[in-house]
Length: 182
Picture: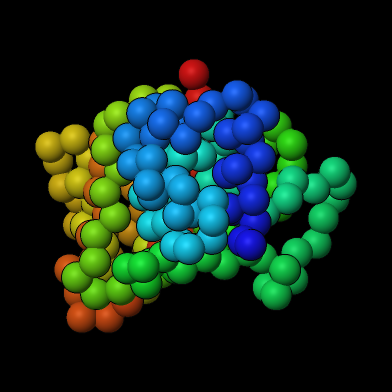
C-alpha cells in the first residue's frame, strides 16, 4: 500500500470522518476515496491536494513521513517523487517537519497539460512562488493569465489558479508554497 493511501485512511479514521464526510469536504467521490485507500488507483495531484486540505494537511505531509531532525540532508534519491495519471511529476525538495507549512517542489508538466486548482480547494491562503527553469508555462490566476518562460518568476496568494504548458516540450518549474499565510 502506498504511503498516501495509508496516511489517508489513518487520518480519516483518526478524525472520525466517514468516507462520505471526507468526500463532501474534499469534493471527491466516495468511491474514489475507497479506491485510493484500497490502493486500486493513484489520485491526480488535484484530487490528492483536495483530500490533503480536507484533512488539514499539506500534500507533502500526505506523501511522506515528517522528520524530527532540525538539520537534514536529502539526497536526490531520498526526495519523494510522485507522478499522477496525467504524467505531471512532482519532486519534493524540502524535508517535511511536523508543523512546517512550507513546501519546495520541482514540477515537470508535459506539453499541452493543465493542472487546475479550484477556489473551493484553496480557500486557505497559500502564498505561491514560481520559477520556470525549462520551457514555457501559462499561469491563470483569477481572470488574468501570465505567460512565463525560462527564468521568469511569479508570486500570488489567491485561490483559484491553473498551470498550463502550451509548448511542445515538458515545462519545468520550481514552486515554493507557504501554507501558513493567514
